[in-house]
Length: 150
Length: 376
Image (cartoon, rainbow over all chains, first blue to last red; front, side, top):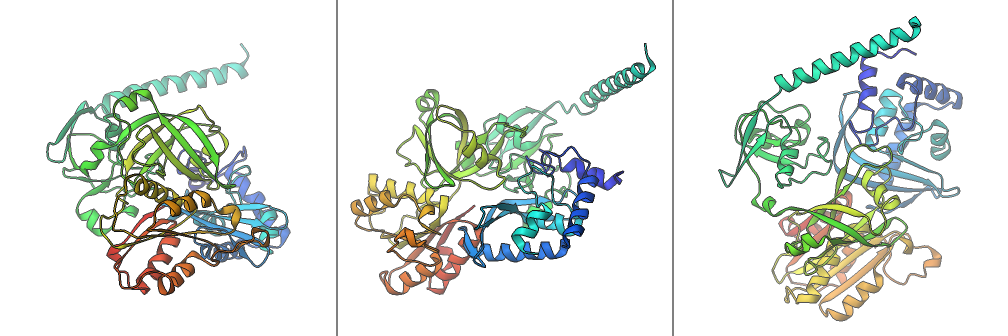
């Protein structure tokens, strides 16, 4: 799929060393638009939507924050840990700044993990971007469905 | 030659010529020559090559302004007051500035490009910050996600006096490029060693998901590796009063308190201070240094250690306090700690933990100006 000009600029900013050292694209060789299109397709196939996933990630972040830096058991099935770091990160699409943090979800039964940040939630909700495969903050649609029970 | 080969060759050739022209033009147009940097009203004057950013230029002159992102403009830590005209604030700076800072022309050193002579104001303490070459002497797993690093300073650094710091200060660990990370990255960690040990630096590093430096520490670093450390930074430290010292930490927030307690043991500093240290973890697998803290309690009469677990597992066989550390703190202040004495709060941890502790301390009569903290 052909990328729009602002999408090209966003893809450039997603490369390692621009906004974050590791970047947002993981080990992807695909174009940004192709990554997003494939994930949108998968969301539809799974019957889930980006807004609900983002809302649930926000809710779990708030639950995790109650642990004051330690893991919290949420709903008897997830361990949630909210970490915070100094500073903020701009969105690669240039539409806001987000506090630097990381939330880790761990499914107690299997040990499966997901990590995300305030910026990840924004990218998911506003840009339908789950981040590239192989990246530490990839929110794969199937994993979201499993961990968030969407 | 086949046209399919000629085409790409011609394109590559033209691109190379264009790149050369751009490079030469850049060198001519953007050659700012020598630029003077006046620091603190002439206390230091540097003559440097223009064109680079202030943060990096100062670092090359061995003046290290704190930066948690290594100059990417994403941490907002490298604030300096600029007294001369360097143009308006950039959009990349404004999110980190309040109105007073904008008014005072406080700038992010990583965003200010040196194009002409400049005058700046920085804390004098920055003149004492040095870059140390160190070698990893030991790495210990304190928990599944916290490592203790013990670094030996190079012979040259030891010969130059080693590291001089106050308990509670932090250092910046420099991770070199690794795997897909193309640039070196710095992150700040409180020093857990005693200031009397000037030949070593000890750091506690908790693994942060996706964290460049913590991942490097946890997956790449090994005994014998040489690493750079810059420091000391920070103003968190023990106040020399007789007030009750109420410390709260979790995870790697243990670091400054370990340093303070060992220093108190070694020097009998602050003899009028009674110390209560509340340390929170989720379960026993997240708890560490229990033995060391018990030993310190045995050696320092006025020290009380209160470890608490928020979600102990049955197999932990935990007999100590349970619940969030804020709840345990509240109970102890109300029921177990001496009454009627002035108190000071000392906190090290996540902003969420610190905010929650400040609420509990304030509710129990401590004034905010007596609550000191080191927010991650």
